[in-house]
Length: 139
Ligand SMILES: Cc1cc2nc3c(=O)[nH]c(=O)nc-3n(C[C@H](O)[C@H](O)[C@H](O)COP(=O)(O)O)c2cc1C
Image 1: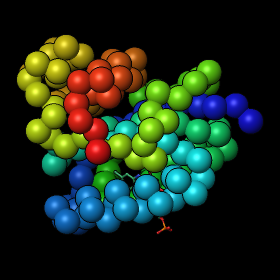
Image 2: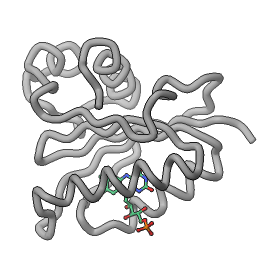
Image 3: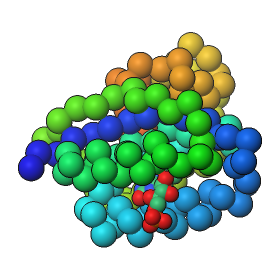
């Protein structure tokens, strides 16, 4: 089954609590590890930008779980492509916090110094995450 990469953006819902991010990462890492999914999650306390890579059926399955999660809303898929290799194979779900989303890096991939993932093309969002992988200490 072929490998795909999916990137989507969402924003926190009213029910979201700051502490939820710990639980989200824990579940994501454990589930993704089990299913051979890798990726990156950027979060600036308002918006999520997430990349999922893996077997097409598995990525679709995990994305469906994510779509049904009411801790976030307004989910929009920005990018969905077959890929020849993973970009984030070191992380079952790498995490990029708001401190890493600097004005410099935001300006490189958008028309603003703010983190505005809804305004990005899928390709810009993907390139932003590749840049973060190289320049930031992803945990
Ligand atoms: C922003 C965000 C990102 C998430 N990322 C993942 C993920 O990468 N993998 C995953 O399995 N669940 C992820 N989740 C959690 C799922 O939405 C869902 O709660 C979880 O898969 C349910 O797993 P469980 O049935 O094992 O509790 C994410 C949730 C949110 C809000």
